[in-house]
Image (cartoon, rainbow, N blue to C red; front, side):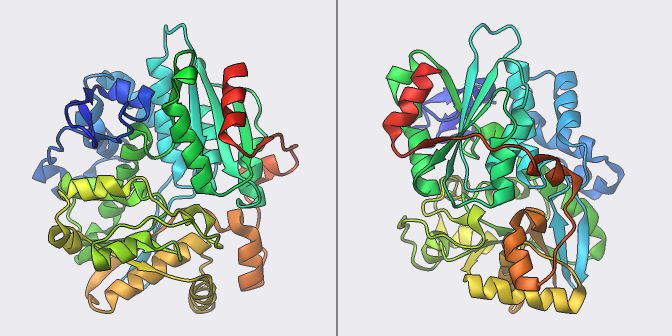
Length: 431
């Protein structure tokens, strides 16, 4: 299996080289050469498979030329050592809880899978790999935790100053060892721009081996398809067509779900639920893609004005709008909408949603207005305690702090404040 650049399909590399490079030399995102559907038996008998077996068969075609089966099984075991329950909220609505991992966010899966792949690839290498990553919230903590102490790998995380929650900031600035945090005077899009610029700066890349742990990296992006399959396994017995509603920022998560659909997963539709950063909802209406400066919201991990992975979704459907609309719809919601539904669901069911999950719930309910006889699954992408101020302010309750969070709360923050690309460049050259 080769991976080609979405800017030029003649640029083809192995999975290993795509992971290590992060992005193609022409700035394109890497995409698998083909997606071969899994057998019908795989889906008909999925209840008999363990999560590890489901994941192994799903990812095998993409990585098998570079990772032997036994090594892949160990990588999967290291990645998936926590649960992914679908919890019924009300009739025809469940939530896929993706916050049972070490940093209590869905990105634990992609970050751990990628860290284990890089650790495998770096065996016997003389030159360290520097992982450069931009975060709007949870990516930073998941990457920091996933790569902590991995031999031959250094991590530099860029995050927008004052625009991540206190807990998110603690998770990415307190670990030390091979993890460095850069606090950027700007928004997430500024951080992402700096990362992309560094990859194309030969003054840096001539001396350092850089890669990215954002969802632009195939090893961060593809394994996210695992938990859509785990959810299907749990919801299959409902006997209804399944719809996934995904809170969407950089669109890697929902794109991975759509790859699972291309693998043959029987799912009726995907809903991309966004906050007021509504580039994709507008595109789905008009067919015109117009990036915009991101706007700060209470669902900060989705504050993205030019989602990198949407180009992968468009490519998956050959840029055919009619075909895409059959599989995808997209809706945006305000902070006021988000808080109101958090209150409503809590008062009716006792379930505490984080603001991102709440946006996912809203998108699902919008879709089910015209498709009522479906079983809808919205993704709870982070534990509500990670957005403690929003939850306390909205619901007037104080959720218990889980042990994964408690262990970082008293640690001292350490970050380097920067306001320009030149400062990042100098840091990388001096490091």
